[in-house]
Length: 43
Length: 452
Image 1 (cartoon, rainbow over the protein chains, first blue to last red):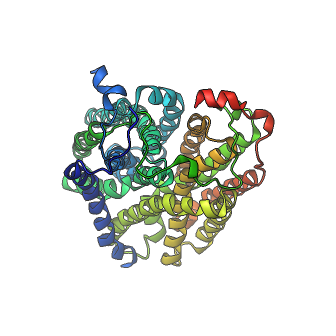
Image 2: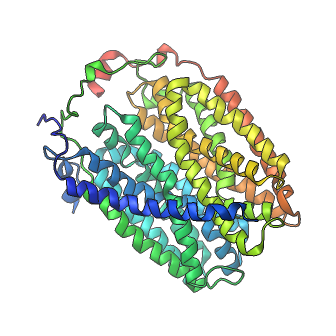
C-alpha cells in the first residue's frame, strides 16, 4: 500500500470546484465586510 | 451506511490530490464557525421572544460548553471511526440544531432553541472542530502548521460569512428592528439549517485519509528540522492531567478565551452601547454588523499570524503577549470609552486576534511540553477550558450589562472589563509558572514505539 503522492495531477477540476465551493462564500463575507467598513467611521 | 462512513472506505487512491482535503475541512469549519455570529440573532430573539441578554446568550453559551465536552469525550471515537463519520455526525447535529430552534421559535418555546442550537448543535461543533485536524496533519506532515492553520482559521472566519448573511435574512423576513416577526426569525433558522446541510455535504463527500505509508513527493521525514526547546519525550494523556503544566495551561487557555468571548458574544450590542450617541440611528445597526464581521476577521487572522510568530519567539513569550498586552488593551477600552473609535476598534480587534491565536497556539504549546505521543487526546481534554470560558465570558459580560441597563454608554461595561483584566493577569501569572515537564512523567521509549 505504500505509495507516493503523484503530485496531485488528478483531479484538477475537482480541486478547483472544491476551493470555489468554500472560496465564494468566504469572498462574499469579505466583500460584505469591506463594503461596511466605512459605516464604522461614518458617524 | 456504516461502510460508507468507515475509514477503510475513504482511503485515498494513488494520485489523489491532498489539496482536496483543506477545502473539505473548510466546508465543515466555515459552517460551524457560524457560532461566532450568534450575536446577529440576539437582538431579534430578545425583542421577538421577549427575553433578556443572559437568556439570549444561553444557546451560544451551551453550544460552547458542548463543543468542549464533545471534543473531549468523542475525541477517541473520532480517531477510531475516521473523519467522514465525524463530519456526517457533526453536520447532522449542527443542522438539527437549527431545525429544532426554528421549531422552538414557531411554537414560542425558547427552551427548544437553547436545547437545539446549544445542546444538539453544540455536539456538532465539538465533533466538527476536531474531525479534520488529525487527517490534515497526516496529509501535510511537511506543513502541519499550514494545514491545521487553514482549518482553524476557517472556524474563526465562519462568522465573516454568517454575520451579514444572517442580518440580511432577518431583515428580508421582517425579523429585524424593534418589532421583529418571530415567524421570520424561525424561517431564518430553518434556511440556515438547510443551506448548511448542503454546504457541509462537500466536506464528508470529499474527505479522504492517506494510505498507510503515504508521504508527500520529495519529503523525507529523516531530514525534518528538529527545534530547540521542544521535548523529544512523550507523556500520556492520563499522566498529562496529573502534571501542574496541564492545569496551568488550562488556566491560561480558559482565561484568555474568557477575555475574548466576553466581547465576541455581545459584540453587536456593545458597539451600539459605545457609539449610540455619536452615530446616527440609520448607520448604527449596519456599523454594529460591520463591527462583528471585523472582529471575526481579526479572530481568523490572529489564528494564523500570531500562531506562526510563536514558532519564532516561542510559546511562552507569545502567551505573554496574548495575556499581558490583552490586559493592557482592556484597560485602554475601559478608559477610552467612546472617545476614540479608531482606538476602540484597534483594541477590540487585537483582543480578538489574541483570542483566536490562543486556540491556534495551544496545540503547539502542548506538543512542546508533552511531546507528540498523545497530544491529540491531551488537546481534547484541554478544550474543557474552552467550555468553562464559554460559560464564564458571556455570563460575566451579560449579567453585569443587564444589571446596569440604566447606565448609558461604555460605563455599562466597566465592571465587566475590569473582571476581564483580572482574569488576564491571572492567566499571565499561570503562564509564568509553566516549566518543562518532569522526566518521571515521560513514557519509556519502547512504549512510545508500540503506540506510534
